[in-house]
Length: 89
Figure 1 (cartoon, helix red, strand yellow):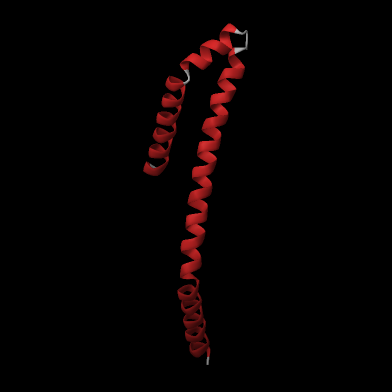
Figure 2 (cartoon, one colour):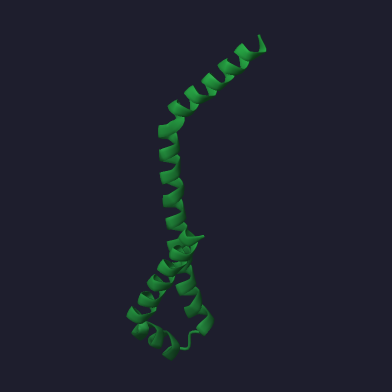
């Protein structure tokens, strides 16, 4: 839960900085008659891509860590099954 809150705060911070840095660009878009919904969509797409890349990074990291644990997991399963077979005899 704490991780989700911290991730959300990180995305909010990135979005605030993005909007602050692009204030002139937003003003130009409005001056040229672009709908506000389109400007909002640009920033929401940025937030989505930021969250997606973070999620993919976490998934890849978890996969790499799990792959490193596969030999230990295999040994644990083999030991458990061997003990179970011995008990059945």
